[in-house]
Length: 320
Ligand code: GLV
Ligand code: GLV
Image 1 (cartoon, protein in one colour):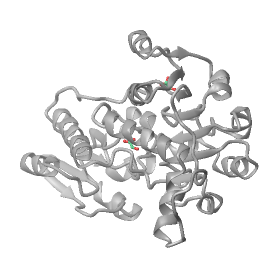
Image 2 (cartoon, helix red, strand yellow):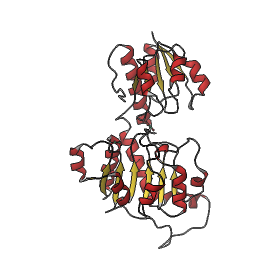
Image 3 (cartoon, rainbow, N blue to C red):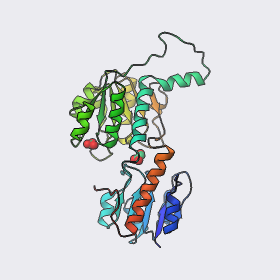
Image 4 (tube, rainbow, N blue to C red):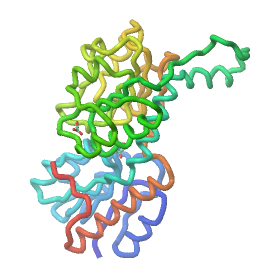
């Protein structure tokens, strides 16, 4: 029996399956593990199934020791894991691609609708008891049909979001580090453009790229200035892809029309300049937060742990 550490409560059967096969140390709590507790828990572990809020770096790998064989991140993004440090020690890293594609794409569209239709502000008005009544010109948003939906990072989630945007009558522009699947591009009737053109022409810019040193602050003051004043920014990727202070300044100056954000630079802190604004929609990193998706993510992480501990190939290794 190997020692397996699971750092948070997860829905579904994943914890039970790990416990049936191995010596499971499960912090069955619905909040991030404090760092000191995490470092103590991993000592001597053979496998770690961790959350995107758990930082896996040399310090943690030292605390774990040489038995550690696999780090299974229960997330598709893996910027919290130092993959090179893991590889240097022969530790396999896995993530959870695929199973959260639809949930995250749904949320990107939800944010698109919320920000372009100003629904956050509208909902707050009803709740606060402020007098309101139907009016012809009150609370007007902007429509999506015929507008350009710009996807930065046309991987699985970006393309799934683009499909939904097409269903809303939008035209799709794609831009990314690597060429998107030509069949998917064709089916979407999408244009593949450079990043500059995407920011200059899109009515909604939706971020789906991973957080890497190259994408850190990809959306900075210059990029925001290149967007249309009527455009909206949607971020369901990772907070640090956007320079949050620059975004606040751009919104204040009317450089862009609004933003829908599910992720922030320094979670769970949110820039106070965003909290005060009516033209932004702010969600607490819930892109993959459906019962079905979170259970599937935990299951896939468990399957990766079980495979590596059984001497088999992991199902979804991170090659980075
Ligand atoms: C969520 O943010 C994920 O990367 O899975
Ligand atoms: C990343 O930017 C990608 O090409 O998907």
